[in-house]
Amino acid sequence: MDLVGTPYIPGRGRGRISYRAPEDPSGRVLVLRQKDLASLGREALPAALVMLDGAPLAHPLIRLFDFGVPVVLLDAAQVAALPEGREAVVDGTLGRVADPGWLPGPAEGPATPPAHEGTVRTADGIPVDLGASVGGPGAARRARENGAGAIGLLRSEYLHAEEAGTPDAIRYREALRDVLELARPLPVTVRLPDLAPDKAVQWRPSAAQSGPLGLRGARLYAYEPVRSACRAEARALGDLARDFPLAVLVPFLTEVAELRRLRRELADELPDDLPVGAMLETPAAAQEIAAFLKEGDHAAIGCNDLMQGLFAADRDLPEVASLLDPYSPVTFRFLRGVAESAGAGIGRVTVCGLLPQMPGLLPVLLGLGFRAFSVEPAMLPRLAGEVAATSGARAGEQAAAVCRAADAAEVRAVLGIGERSP
Image 1 (cartoon, one colour):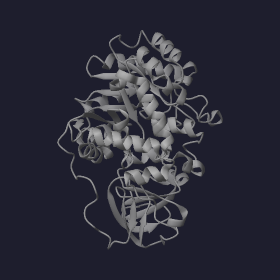
Image 2 (cartoon, rainbow, N blue to C red):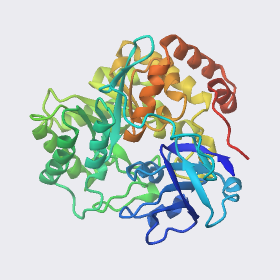
Image 3 (cartoon, rainbow, N blue to C red):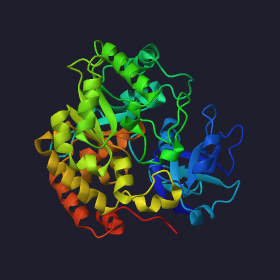
Image 4 (cartoon, helix red, strand yellow):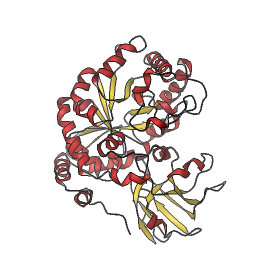
């Protein structure tokens, strides 16, 4: 048995295959559907996870990075070849699930981070900023240990996700300080609360009826209790900015007027010298990147939600996950236009999300002109190696070929990325 699926979280684990999460899953390779992830506790973890028909961009899957176990995505036909109780090796770096005899060597990628401090260089000396996206103190510590040059995105909505009652400035200050101390001396960009139907928190009931394009992100800041939480966090950030290098991101904006209005409303909480920027997660916002850079101090492109908008496919639904292929040339043609619109401001733009983490795609984004990225801490060593192995000229050639490609299969061929095994 040697199945090739989609690599998701790097590392290698070995154990017996199980289709249910036992009380103690250690030493097991769990095969789960996306809807079953709620049964997976944090106290005892499996050796590895195989996700059956998971949606790679879905928030529940992205949260698996916090567990620190290797993950591979397989489809139903592949999973049919995995009988209960059979021993298997899962390599999340290569995207392979195989018999224990398949051990060509250690999991691909350096065991320890390369000697860099966030800014790595291509083979011809182009500097690239590699930051980390985190949701709490543990991930911040891993980011620093893995060589991140910054916390490029702190998902602050997760800091009080399990707590009842709207968080006030004191609670925000305590929770944020815990993260900032572990990240020190790295600069940290904090995203204000980014709540959505698929990211329910205890202190605000989910509004699932609003859908993925309804009331979410900054659109909720006009409504209680999110309005009060946003102001409380801004007040805490204003206080902490005296002791830590901070920046702020406003999520899910569509128009520049929204950023202008929010900066005005939070003027009493946020110091004038605290950088504030927009997270561009819709095609409309990304097209206006030049205007957002003029109004704000920096910007981030949220590729996961951006792709959701581009392809009109809910990122959390496994049934439409095939429409959100990260190797689609449509995405890169769109991002080429965004980079051109940013012009000289491209250095103030950070690319976030799954896209730069996928094998072979970071050099393509470099070829389009982007120079700053925020990724999961576990991905930093491999991506630093990808950067060091490419050159500006080579990245430019790959980007041009990808943008000319007719479909995702051709993009994979251009990049030498294998298709899934049958």
